[in-house]
Length: 166
Image (spheres, rainbow, N blue to C red):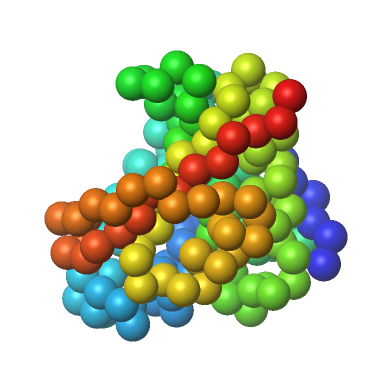
């Protein structure tokens, strides 16, 4: 499925929240439980959090638009502690569009935007038990760099990274 990837707007926020909620319940609730999933979504995925992303020019916050609806989104920010690195914070696709290539299009788009900004590396965190996401990142050339305990969601997680060409 080909999608139009464009900068997110305030008008996209409700659709982005819907994608995030559906993806979190499908991918993360089996790992961390529904109660933790719900608390995390309420704490970090409210409309104000997304408005902040839309209004922050130093960040990347783009959506995958399938014409009538947003089916995915990607967001990230410069790593303040590592000048050559950009952090990938979110790449989510509506579960009905999983395996349609939308996630890979979003990730490739993100990598291009990061490279255009002069960054050489991308870093991200992924739950240690999220086999689907780990396989996705490994297929795109990412490698595990470290392990950490994520107290926000009470689970072990991995740091994955990729060196960009050019």
